[in-house]
Image (cartoon, rainbow, N blue to C red; front, side):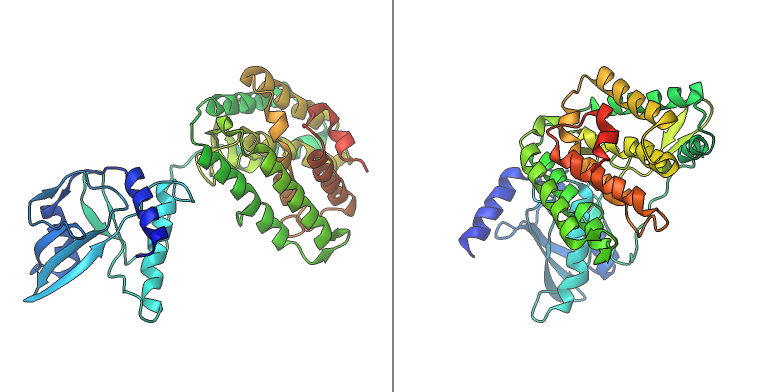
Length: 380
């Protein structure tokens, strides 16, 4: 075996996360489900350390287990593989599920590759079950009553009349982010991963720039590339600020907030992981105050300027996180690429798109974001 692979296996073993005891009876129950009731498990355990005992204690995720069993008088062997939690995109259970589902789907399509017999999962009690028949996955959620927050912004753009409730709701949303962002996690690799994903994830900056036409008016490939390059420079500026890793929503925009009576609301559709940079959430919401105002008045003004400043002032005051203004730039660039997109917003005027792109470029060029300078950022 190559030395590099041995080192990787040693690393996996050092990081392996113990799971409940791997029991013979549960393995046999699973094999009965998969191969029929006549299966007899003869031995199981780490390769070269198999046993016929009733249990294997302190089994670690990522450690291959060889199973020797008899089916209809024929002795067979198989390897039960799991994936160890760790860096390199394996931090979350969904990451590991994705990789193992891909293994099952693809192994059999390559000449001379070992075949995948099944793909399954462990319960918290150590039982095994198959998910091989699945083709698409789904999530079932509770129903939440309420009206999308973007309807409030539509009304403000239509009437220009700010109600006390509008300010109350903006303050409530800012306080909500203050509360969830107080939950921190110490994991430098995960913070850096989230910055990588901001640049390279298909739903984020590079996915968005690739979705633009080769040329769309003033929007050229050179312009999009320059924004990507500036964002990557920001990634290098931020990558060591790992103490900022916080609980986040990940897609906190007006269409993902449902308000009921007064300031009672529910949040929907958090995205791309539980942990990240707080600026992601703050920019996702506040850029929409700018967006609605640009479409209505061509500048940040009136009720939307009040709400923009109200949100930022409340967040900064109650979180004490002055550094969020030092980390906001690439996240504003991401959200700006969304709202300027001809794919998502085909009917925007040329001037609004130009203002958004000027905002992106000027914010990326500044040392820190200043909430009181938004209109200047939109200028040439």
